[in-house]
Image 1: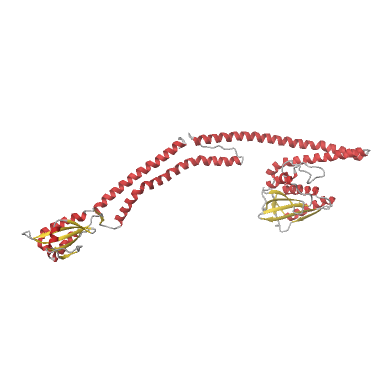
Image 2: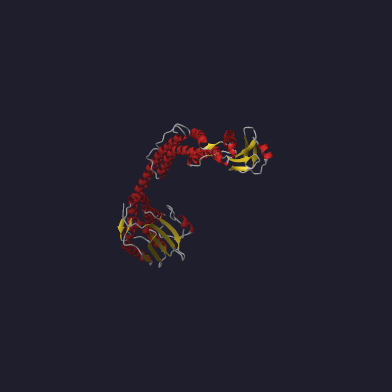
Length: 480
């Protein structure tokens, strides 16, 4: 198969099926014929077998003459007619029955009997031959009428005869059976030969989906499948080179952005320090105070954007370095609630955290969980008006830990619900913030939740306000 084209392989398979079917059929027919010939003389009597036995009866009648009319001679006739389906009836010269195991369909007289001498007549399903009985002077003394049928007859009905008969019947339909049998055998062999490279290609496709490109499709054949595997392997090599180059460019870009974000922190810190020094230590008028406040606000905004960029860059590293630790989640959440309540107190916002029904400990990446909650609660504090409320519910169900952060702020707009988790989404005025943002908070939260094996969704509360729900598996044992 490796050195034949697919169309050639299909033709060879069909020819093999036909050749095997014809050969097997001929062998079967030969065996059936041999078996039939063997049983023909041992178990089967030809259709005219009983007719031939009438000659034996005629010879016996000629030899015994008038003695045949004596019922005491019945044993001789019984012996002569025993082999086969031959029956007889002995009549006197007037057509009256003397003895025998056959009875004429109609009564006979002397004249009728004379007409039947040495003739064969048909009576119902039987053929009847009349053998005359003469004395030495040629006077008709009577006759023996022999009845028989012309039909094939089995002399034995044992298992061998039945088996041969069944075999002969099966032999008649054997071509169809052989065609189905050999079609299945040769088609499966052909399918197995085709399935091997297809399985290699399927496995290679799955590896490429996992971005595993360090392999080779080890299948070489001088046909279409070999060409396909060679082309696939060339594509894999080209893709590996392309992705390697892309990964290198991406790594370079990430490192450059990380370096720029890090370097921006220094001038921003200097600007902020000098801005605060001017505001605190230098006499300024009202207009200059306003300018300094604007500068300070924009420095804070730029610093927040830099921190957001650093968080995005850290996501890739977090996917590789985040590990779980076993913690008492109830106690851990209590500490977070206290920190959030202290932060929200400046705006007169109350924070409630419900955590009923939790187990004593879970295996959780607390760094990722803290960053998600900090982002979500921070957004809610900014969006919730003074005197508002933020509710945080944590529960376990269906093998997952589920978190909900709800507030009574303006909620999400329809556009926010579709795009708020996109990178650098700035949104609209539905949920304004005091100092602007880089549009990275929900994007980072969604990716961290995914890295923990869960997900994140956005919604609005029925009575107003936003609701952010995320979850991750409720693991009991920690692991790296």
